[in-house]
Image (cartoon, one colour):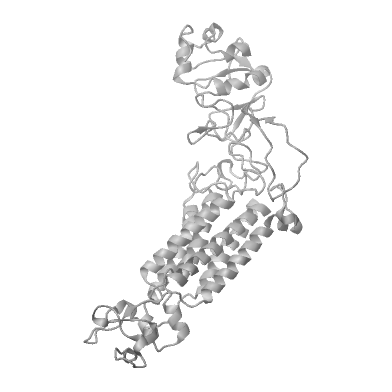
Length: 480
């Protein structure tokens, strides 16, 4: 019974120090063993981490198929004609037509087109785990949406636009005379104009199908697959990110949405669905697509992370280096650079001052001003590497080069300057720092590259803020 028993451990693990100085303990392993996403696994290794999803998908598929084949659960009343013979609801009296896009074709398009695009993107991305996460997430979306909508069809349903044509009601079967063979089919409601399916004389299978109009299965599948594909393309092409992309990328990103809308719109032409059936299917499919994408990728809209596939056994290091940080199709402005483990590293110089949203990165500053450490570096920059004005490149200087901290928090090489001690720099109220202030508007903390290891905290601690500027201007002022 090892499947249902917990793993045995040798004993408690002593706390270790986290980068921010707080103690942390090793978390208990889950049912997934650790694995790396930078190498392609064997089939056995892949199956070991995916078998539960495969089993779940098979079970959900069987449940969905069983519900799809079941007869409609509710007994729905419907009106046919008034006493003068006029049809009460002509919107349910459309002729029976052949489907423009059969349901199996819509499902295949929603699955195969995204998978084909995932494969094409691997020409540049070249990552098994990116393709795996993309495909698994697509199946999450399609299968969950399908099961969701068949349950609604079965338990709620609705009348298709061609219901009366398929039903072929014979109102003579309904008679209020006692003892009449059709007494159980008597008309109900005000003026006795409402009937149930017992008055129908058409094909039983077609009648059952025409009672399950809401929501649209075509639209649910189309939006579940194509909205998911659109999110994938946006992430891999970086359409909405930190640079101005080409227009064709916008067209490619929204082309799947157009396809989903065309599939849904075709259902109003062949009169298989009402407009509200199509809208309900689109909402269900879109919700499942968003949910599934976020399960397998690090973000949906955050362009810094939405291209990174998630590991099953290890948390995503937001603000740290990710395994597949370079998994993008576009190579513009440093994205997807060869060997780049993350687009926001000290090598590439991307970053947002260590701040993600309203939260500072895990760099020990606890929200003191802004930092110039790139998001995702995970450690101080290497000696001799400095951020320049160009955010996409690093500036290299040799050992012993004088440097200074400008008022925007960037370490820059400068002319020959008298170095200050690291201990002096850590205390901004000391007169030693005030004496090193440049006549220019910049705040200069002079040192050399040889002292950079000891000065690395300065980039985090002495990032300019109104409080620090006031303290340097007036050394005798009380610290806040």
